[in-house]
Image 1 (tube, rainbow, N blue to C red):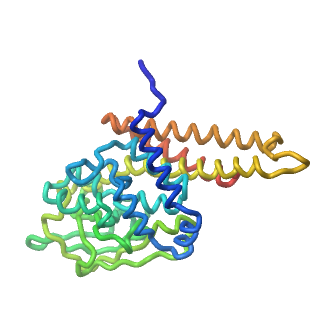
Image 2: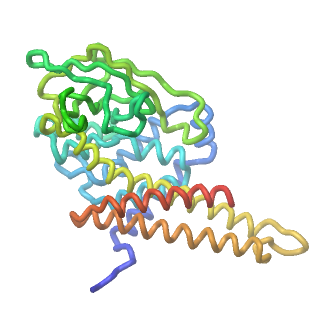
Image 3: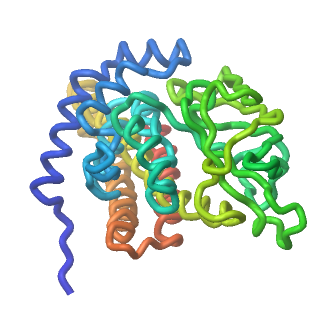
Length: 339
């Protein structure tokens, strides 16, 4: 059995290119500006998209880069290393829609929705979470009822990333009210900004990651054509689970990058700050803490890269993706707190 823990030359070049871009564009002043304004960095998103950084996993035939999840993790990690708020916002601009359409969409859906997202001309949102059930998607209050060649959607969604700024939405709905268990009667639908019956609102005053906009959807007799059904009827819950496996890895990469950025700032400060005539990094109380940070970050990175590698090999593992997300998120909290 051969184990290779080093990135390929192409992956290293991707890492260098993203770091160079972030050092130039992700300035502290810009991060603070968008954090205070609670505003999505649209111009920055478009710049990143133009360089292909937001479409790593989208095939070239749909204007993407044709790479895998590991390369995407490298990009996301570097962006969040530079600034967690800007990095999360930019990396989640085309959230979930390309992934679900590439697996289950019609060719018409792929050609209509994926290229604009790959180019940075559009923003996506995935509407799963509801006020009464939170992240428990086994139960949906949002319904979709067939009416001729249309589906009529009613319900509310909350805590939806990109909701107030999105051009395209995927919405999880209950299409079979009699299904037992109920999640066997859920379906996914595509909707677009400006459709009658689709209203969004912005959530203000988040504790952090403010450039990554969060909001709610109010769906009142929203009519979508039959062709906007994604995949098979009543299979939406299972498609959502597939999506979550990928997003867990992306979130883990965000966490690793956030921790890495905090560690580097703390390390730099410890070498510059002097007490009793020498840098504080010379004191064991400081150096031991920095060493612990470095070990935790490397462990989180390995879990994340392993989960991404498995996914790229067609062996995606829910346990591996869950461990990566849980551990990397914990490490990000601990490192930023200690730093």
